[in-house]
Amino acid sequence: MTVPAREHYIPLRCSALIDFLCGDKDLADEERHRFQRFCQLVTAIHHYEFEKRLEELKSSYAPFDPDADTRELAMVCAADQQRSLNDLYSDFAWLMDRADFRHLNRDDFEPCHQEVSAWGIPMNVDFSAFEHVALFARGDVVQKRTRRRWRNFYRAEVADAAVYQRLVLILKLRPHRRIDERVDKNCVYLKLFKDIPKLDIKMLLPGARVHLSFFDRSKIGFPLLSGLAAAAWSILKDIGETFERVFTVSGGLTTTVWTLALGGIGYGYRSFYGYMQTKQRYRLNLTQSLYFQNLDNNAGVLFRLLNEAEEQESRQVILAYFFLWRNAGPEGWTRLEAEKFAEQFLDKATHLQVSFAVSDAISKLEKLRLVEKTGDSFRVVPLNEALERLADTWDNYFNECDRPAQGGRLTPRNAASRGA
Image (cartoon, rainbow, N blue to C red):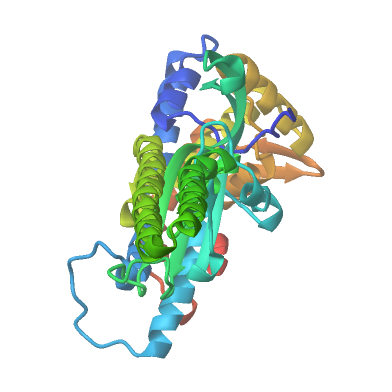
C-alpha cells in the first residue's frame, strides 16, 4: 500500500506545544518568561482575528442553517439569497484551507463509486439529488483494523485500511425521489466525520441506497424462484390428472389455480420479508458504524473548524519563530533549511510525520513584522523587540480591524492581505 504523503496539519494543542518548547533546558528563566509572553500575544492576536471571521461565517450561514431557531427581520429577495449562498461557499472554502483540509476532486472520489471496504456498507448514490456538494479531507493515513471474512471462517484478522482522519461535507439538496419531502431543500448541511475509510465516503451522503450484494440478492430471490418452480410442478401434475378425468376438468383446473395463487402469495411474502430484513440489517450496521464517527453537524462544524484553524495559525508562527530564534544563528536560514530542520525536530521530538509549511509560516511572521530577509535567508528579530512589535500590533489592532474592507465585508481575498 502506498505511504500517504506528509500533511501540513500539526496535531498538537497550542498550550501543550508552548509548554513543550518552554521546557527546553537551554532556555534561561528570563528567556522562558519572555517567550511565554510572546506566545500569549501571538495567540491573542490570532484569536481576535478569527473571532471576526467567525462572526462573518455565522452571518453567511444563518439564512441556510437547518437548526436555527431565529427569524429574519426582513424578507430577502432571490438575488440577495443567491449572493449570500455564494459568499457562504467562498467563506467555507477559505476556512477549509486555513484548517489544512484538502478538497477532494473527482479523481479522489471516483474509486469510491465502484468499491467498498471490508468495514463499509455497499451504497448506491444518485448525484442528481444534490444542488451542491463538496468534500474536504485531512489526515490521509493507514490504520490497523480488525475484520472477519468467510474465507477465513470469520476469525478476527488485522488488515490495513486507508482512511481520512477528518472528512467534511457541505451540501445543498434539491427535490428528488430519494430525498424525504420533510427535508428542507433551502438549507445547507455541514457534516464532520472522523476515521472514514476512503472507499466508504458514499455512506455519508444523504439519499444513498443500500446496494445489495449478489449473495444477499440470491437469499431474497431463491425462495421466490423455488416457490414458482413448486407451483409450476403442481400445475403440470394437476393438468395431467385432468386428462384422465374428463368430467372433473373444471375441478382439476380449480385446484391448479388455487395451488398457483397460494404458492405465489406464500413465497412472495417470504421473499419480501427476507428483502426487508436484509435492508434493515444493512441500515442498522450503517447507523452503528457512523454513530461514533460523527463529530459535528451544521453550525457546530464552523465553530470546531475555525478553532482548529486558529490554533494551526498560532502553532506555525510559534514554531517558526522558535526555530529561527534558537537555531538559525545571526545569518538566518533559507526556506529549505528552515523546513528541513522543522520536520526533523518534529519527527524526533514529537514523533509526528508532518510537512512544515515554512513559506506559510514565514508569511505570517512577516505580517507580524517578526522576521527580516537578507538575500534568500530569513532571521527573526530579537525576542525583546518581537515583544514590543507584538504589543504595538495588539494596541493598534482594534482600529485597524474595524476599518471596513472593500464593499464593507471582509472577504477571503482581502482577508489574506490583512491576516484574517
